[in-house]
Image: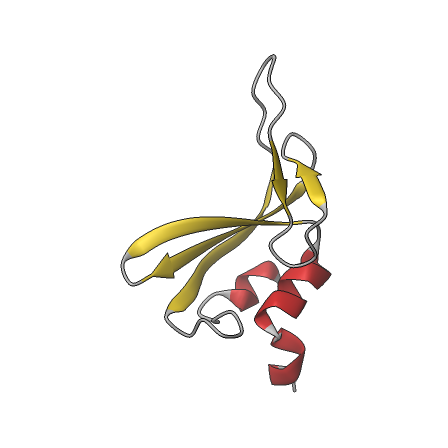
Length: 84
């Protein structure tokens, strides 16, 4: 599935949120290491290493979620249930 195909979907249990964008991401900050948990599996991600960024619109507010890989995004959105 192309990453752009996730646009417009909502995460399971949060139908008020809509995916605006999914993109490969790397956050590089000299002299600083930032980590975040994967929004699906909870694995700790080092944001300077490749991961996926999902931008959500939640009632007019944009939020970011970080994912280890596409399978985590798919599980978080339960996209497999909607794939024909």
